[in-house]
Image (cartoon, rainbow, N blue to C red; front, side, top):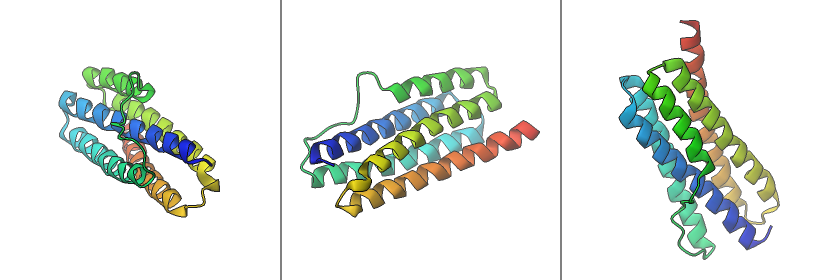
Length: 152
């Protein structure tokens, strides 16, 4: 994979994590339930950590400074849907929206990891795998809560 493609992929992940942070920060202020607020805060922190690592990797590649924001973040749309669920104050809808958004994030990471399998520098792959596993753990927490409240 070319350096340009690697930079493009890392920037895509940076944008996704920016969208995720902004979405969960926004949702945090809208949410009423303390446990949901804590969850949103934790999810945003995961992406802040990912952003930091991605920025470091981009620097190592000599990429131009990119703030990681797009004019129309496709993932930010998902967070807008979650915000609607929060306004309804329906825990099940909130968790369903979170699951949907997190699934999209994981799919994008999987796609990029698969594309980058040919990277000579396995350090970048280990960063991406680590981030994927952090995001997957977030997804699993959301899924557990979703299933718990579905049964209640």
